[in-house]
Image 1: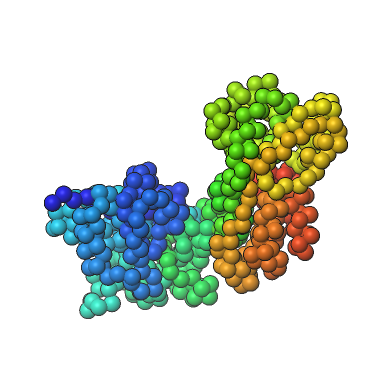
Image 2: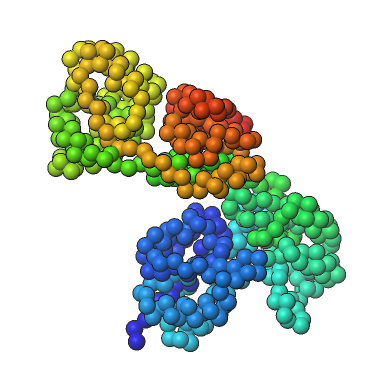
Length: 500
């Protein structure tokens, strides 16, 4: 009987950026994904075309026993060509990957092991703790901090661990930390040996508490550190004072809600995460094609008859070019037509399609576009095409018409409400778990107010520019941060300055 292949894949410690290229490749072509609790949702989403089976466990609660998982993998291999068994960290480091591999071999199922970065190395590294260091220690041991409670005796040589290994990294070690530390001290390790606990290592929510064998258990209890955590023991922990980097970034420890449409939010969210923030994506809107696609296609087909095309957003550019293609045309249709772009992002989107904007106003609002156009050309009798959102402010077309221009407005796209996750965001805000809510358009503000309300509690509010700020204030919301440059990079810069 033919069988598929089971890939025992390490997802790494949590940060999606630490996923290996081989793991990413397999996730992209997986037919079925079997994954654990400590795998980042962002990594699971990479298996977009796969059937998903969750087999995780948290706090001792198992969705399936290990024997059930073993049988499941054999059964799935008989039905699917590519079975990805995704495990947090590395499958062969306290991941029970060896057990699953043995079962697959006995069943005659082909398998491949794809190592991942284990949390016992990555967590300390993100906390600024190298597990080895020349002149400090040249040995490291990865140790289970929670042996099988059904065993009568320990498999660990505590005397050797206490005196014979420089750095000890305990997995699942918070619950039995005091007992484990007592055994190390009884085995000859000094109670003044530096030690640290790293919770949620490599995730934006990572926290680190440092002390000694004598003091760390109490410090961990006081800080409320829990699972998942790794515990590091050894002189290398003292290097954290000099080498800590991850939790010293500008937004470390801040939780930020991003209300931008999901299709546009990834870059913004990634930049916030790179600055240390934990991002809660709450797309209050999503972008859709305008209902009357034929109207946009007709306008695109006749673009050569206009003097100017004014693009107010990257969405307008994207949907206009789709209409061009639908009309059997491409960028050459704009030969002889001058183009105005509101903002550098819109100009960059045009440039990616071979069109250099003739005009980019200094300010990225409708009023500035009108003034810039009027300064550049006599608007009297000028034919201007304006492909933009279905619902938008009338300032731009009305002002152009007042100056004698013939303006053809066409809906290139529309924004619709997307309220998935509203209850969770409201709960987090009420509980004081949100530090900042960001708004990149008036539509995001209006929908947020409708879905969540206007009370952001102790969370600050950040706006991309004066138009969005005005909408927020009209809704009764305060604005704590406003971008000086009305772009996502400008908003990021303003947020950094706010917490400087």
